[in-house]
Length: 225
Image (tube, rainbow, N blue to C red; front, side, top):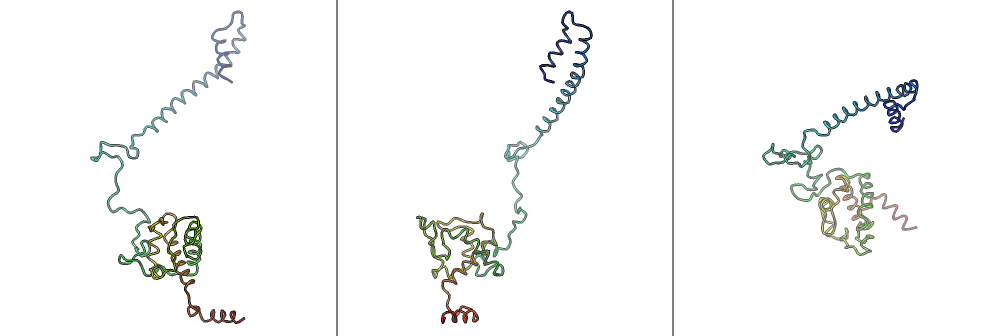
């Protein structure tokens, strides 16, 4: 029942028209009585609920970066205890996480390089590195062809002789015009990319003697045909 109809019935009960029968007035009272009772109960419940809601919203607590007179430095937000390390962020293995051993770029990989690691490295390399370094690492990627600064080729003697830790550091921290990819590429994937870069360097500078004997025979047989 709408509030307008309720209002009309209430006025008729409280202000009966002259000549209106007692039965008709009683009918009006019969309709209004339960409605008024329900309305009163609802309003009482709503008032109590609103009161609780305000208490919940106005809790005595500090918001982030709010000022405080309780602490000497005047800040509600407290600094971390010195030496605090987030769970999973201890990273004591500098070889794995920093690419260094004794403060120098690591000459080795922190885990065994398998075919699966190389395949993962190839996948990540094709996603993140080929736009600048192209598919074979010569530095002629698509963005370079469109005017971006050309990176050095991986096949220069200087980079062929660079240790794996050097490449890991460049991926992690960036170098020159290259941004760092620490946010985009997880630690182990960075090493996988480095392993694949080593495979690219080998592929472009390999000698026949580097090929396993069985594969060498197959290549020589194919060449004769």
